[in-house]
Length: 359
Image (tube, rainbow, N blue to C red; front, side, top):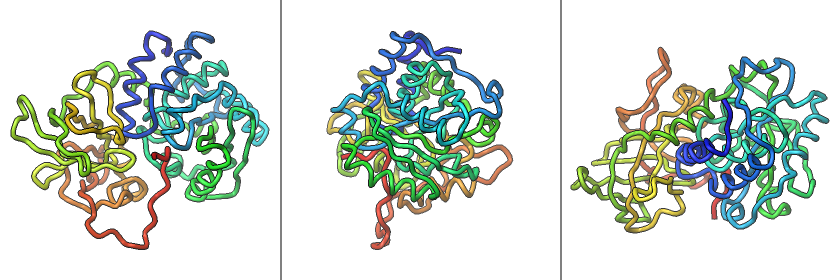
């Protein structure tokens, strides 16, 4: 399978849905991918079984402010600098790229950078959606080292981070954002080909294409009645319904009559009913006609370890009864309890670093 200029719009729409209201603006990244595909041709999508077991798979993405990403178009040389430094550090050629996160802008940037490097793109990613932190990855759950990791900009200014945990990597990359102007290209949790099948969210590229072509039925369709604590009033067949959407950098939970319809780690997306495009959490406005959809996450996030890293309580939510639409791995533990906002979060608990950081 290839991603070309014809399939890119559907793929980008699917990445936006998997962003769950976050992940950075897809419009800029989609334009970058379109230009790269025009210049260099289609990107081949490969399965983990097709990879050389000993060569490197380089996860790629950006970290920083989504506002900066919207205003400052990145260059074309960042993937080259990342690849050169990763190959120097690991002493092994990079055989393929993989999106650090399929949700949001990074899913499209992986296509752009694969085209520019002439490398295939693996049908997998680190999250199966977008999460705000760099350490909220399947690779972290599987014990893959996040370092050596590389951050750089389009001028080749490069920082190597080594011998730190995923949470420390997040903190150090955040510290580097200011001198880099609020945005960096990154590669972390670098894999050997034989590790991909057991240490990533599989089928992510295929899933984004499928979602961008055929969206799931909405949980509710209506209009935004309030934007502080987001309230959506049902219209048409949903007239008389009222749901509350809890949001941080991404949409976290959908509540109706005090009961959850869906909650993180599953994907919750808000679509503009007029255009069908995904709405970012920071761009929700009064009166907007929307449909809210739910997409089950990769089953790994409903394991005990996955829930500790990226479940409701990781986002300051407390447990409520399980929504009927939640998914669980076959034969595994029950899915995560859905949630509502914690009324009295611990005062000493710091806000988690965000990827990307929104303004």
